Image 1: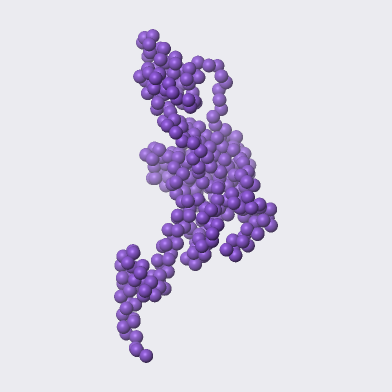
Image 2: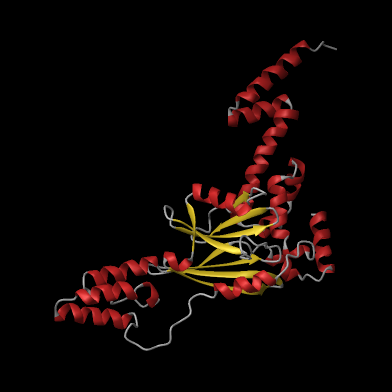
Length: 330
């Protein structure tokens, strides 16, 4: 607790408000804004001061897993690459260590093995909105995506069967770029008045018969260019990277005692995502077992062996019992 207070005081001296400190637990994770039978809307704020180019000055890329139907975003910080699932926020962030000679190529290969391929949101029936934002004083990259795949399937069914009743009660507007070519294909095939009438009703729902200006559903190029001009500020302001750096350190390098002290602090759970906190708890458990195996008393070894049934503990217990038996009585 004392360390946490000192660190908070250090942040305040560097111009960080309490609001910024609290915001650290709200960034670098994805939230579900809206989800219904037609569309799923996701939003995330990612710290951007440490972002490094991935390839050709691009500081973020989208990947899609067809098997799990997951759209994810890849970011590059320090010496690691982070893949955040956008469609499955509960999924643990994938951290990848890249080959120093061909970093992106090696990362891309690993992702391919896991079922992810580089894509654009529009290629998987999604729209994206990205922007440079300050979230409670912290420089972030705002990412919003909307998944229209379920809505597209409903409209395709209605068009294919010339049955407007299937979309009669739908209020969500489907971006016309996802459906216009499909619609025109079936419009040419319509062979009678009934089919043409049904298609006209569907076209009205999709606003295909209007002369409204074409809506811009992506601003990727502008944001990538703006990000490319920003130089990573890896040591300028601790509050900009504490959410990532703290987690990375305690997840990969901290000793058992350091991790135990860190997790014992009351405010830690609020500054980490659910998955990050769970991951640190799992590492804490592993480190504790290793510590007991190496330094634990006979009672501690027996108590832990009852729960994990690890043969290493049994061997150590037998050795400790043997040591007790050969000790001379006083």
